[in-house]
Length: 193
Image 1 (cartoon, rainbow, N blue to C red):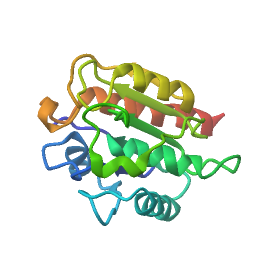
Image 2: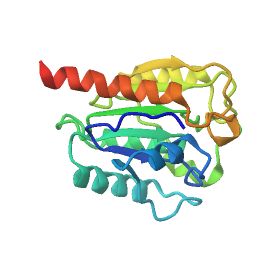
Image 3: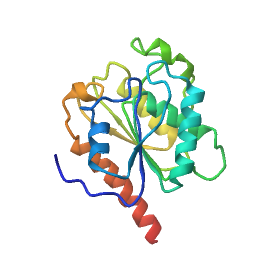
């Protein structure tokens, strides 16, 4: 495994349905870093938007406003719903890496996640990077690009990586870690300014 530097900020891992198994990049990152914390959702296979958003809120409040989020799949929609609840108030987190945004209107969107509709399409209130694959069965790159624009986030096209999960064979996914490090670096520059 590559030796990624330990960030000075807490990183909150927010998986999607199924809680990202041991070979998923989120789990691998968490195993490498003591400051990476996983969202404590009670039900991973029958997600309830309100429960996920409440757990996300409680966890970020506990970790503090310096928290950087690394979300995947349905976890990205949970982050968008959570951020939308803050409106004009202070940003609830420092930044977010949002990977493989699923498309609720798409043919493969899980029926048990329908309560995550509609997707909030307003600025998150904190910096973000949205990463999409050209051949993600759960969401098109066009949908992810539109979400990124609405959320005020940068869009990154990752190529043909499927759902950017364990099945994609990414291992520790150094490209994703580089994007997270980029967010952490930008935040470090803002703090120094």
